[in-house]
Amino acid sequence: MEKLSVSHMNARFALPNRSFDFLQFQHSIFFLKFPNPNQNSNPNSNLVRLRRLNCSVSDGTVPSSVGATDSSLVVKKAAEVSSDLKGTSIFLVGLQSSLKAGLGKLLADALRYYYFDSDSLVEEAVGGALAAKSFRESDTKGFYESETEVLKQLSSMGRLVVCAGNGAVTSPTNLALLRHGISLWIDVPLDLVARDLTEDQFVPGSYPEVRDEQGALYDKYRAGYATADAIVSVQKVASRLGRDNLDEVTIEDLTLEALREIEKLTRVKKMIEEAARPF
Image (cartoon, rainbow, N blue to C red; front, side):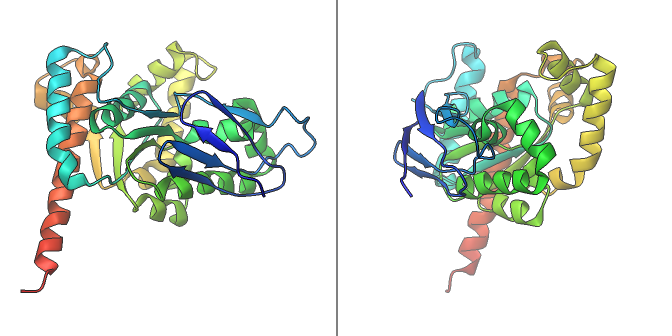
């Protein structure tokens, strides 16, 4: 089957019909073949644009919206962590929110990693959010297989920060794939998640309805989130910084916390490796 190459920004690729295949990274080129549930679609309907939102690579600079002091601390800590990290990929789990996504993008920028949103990859591969919703409802097993396929290919790469969807913690297979890298649970309070989703109109419904829905998701996936290697908690960061208002916790604060947790994990791994060496 023909492989279609995709550059990492603003490129188009075609999804073959009736086939599972792979997403592969090599230098700055991506090859993607993916199951297309729309078997009778017209020839152009399975063309998907991979936008910078889903895959980006940093040039080492931090977005201009980041304060100068905080950004310098993030970059400094990332430089300290990078040597021991050795290109190990990082997977972020937890309820979707702008804090989680923002942390992922800033972390990728600071480490000079590529950034992916796994949910968006699945959605774009099957024709968009509405098509993904229809696919999930009509063929749940097939949809889960698609999520696993994306995660399988992402976990085989290095130098990635992956903002993972809830599908990443729904099966032993997917949880095992997360072990190919470092996993962090980005624990954002339900109130902030619901307000975020409501204000940005990512999901329909009033604030109380959205909060209840997100609470149900939290209860459903909490055990999966808890398998992560470390937790980055908005509430704990606020408490440590002496901030009574959780809105005062910035993406930079959370990214620094994530880098500290990554540093601890890499140090432990290094100690274990050194202890295992023969005398």
